[in-house]
Length: 71
Image (cartoon, rainbow, N blue to C red; front, top):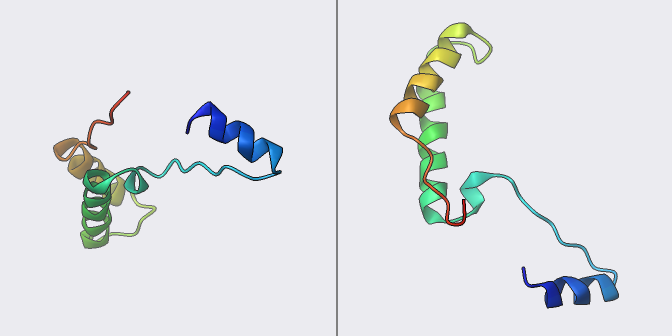
């Protein structure tokens, strides 16, 4: 967000909200996050189990998150 816009927001008492959820950044990230959620849902183990964590890790290693511009 440009500094001029931030100054205007401050002058009017507005609020700027920032998300740290990768799926909201662009379409490629949204598609990746959808894939992650689908992979998590397909794991046949409790979410607090070592098996679930391991299967999720295997998926994440095979499907790295998209690179973001400016990073």
